[in-house]
Image: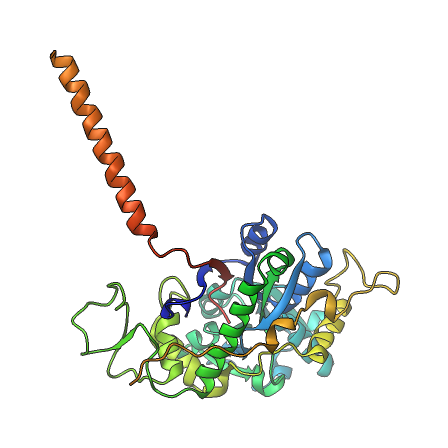
Length: 324
Length: 46
């Protein structure tokens, strides 16, 4: 999004293919800001190898449990005795599944959880490597669009306001460049507000098909909005996010994710809520995420140790929108 | 001027031209890059 603006910090996107490669880059001092699984962020903060803080959310909801279209499962309870892929052992998706297992009286052996890379989950479901998976978008929508998967549950229906990934920054960045963190946080908040509440004015740098002779990819004209695509903020965002440097996905897939239904992923209410994180922490402790350094009375661990919400109080910047 | 000296001078002129061109390209490339930058990591998943 920041490329659409001509002022302020340039926030470059770096796409990773696995969580370990991202955490290694953070530990090596090569990366100071990232969107990462909430419990993994807590685990990093607890481990203390590289001090990090959660400073904001990037979205809410946007995760689903997917089964094959020919599956007999109608509810989570029907998954007893099967295998389910999860994105990471320190993910909130795993916590949700463990919560559902407890609610439905499952024993640990009643549902076999398998760590699996999210981008590979749809193909593996199709191949029969497991009977279901839980994942953040667009990999739930991918199976739906390709016709072999269906959503059993959206998180918005079973854990409203679900938190998957959070924005973390290193403590070093907070201490040395707090203004950059501030700009990043307020930029994300403003973008989210525009996504959920904005009108159809195009973002700066985007051009409507037919209004330019430049080919897609030329400088300043690399996001062309096709006439048939629509121009709501979510559709503009789908076109931007589909680019190689971001999600590198089919724009139609991201359009599906952001519109079917529109509340499949939510971009408002991104502030850090203490009670939500304390609930995630309780489950993380229960599931042994902090076993390397257990939380005790003598060695406590709480919201202030892994969250820093000071950057959420600033005035929001205006989005760089075109006049028409 | 010997043939060897002419070759040497031509080579020196060529290298100087390349260096100058490289510098000009670099200047153009980084023009306006006084804006601060920060890399943000992510996976292609929400």
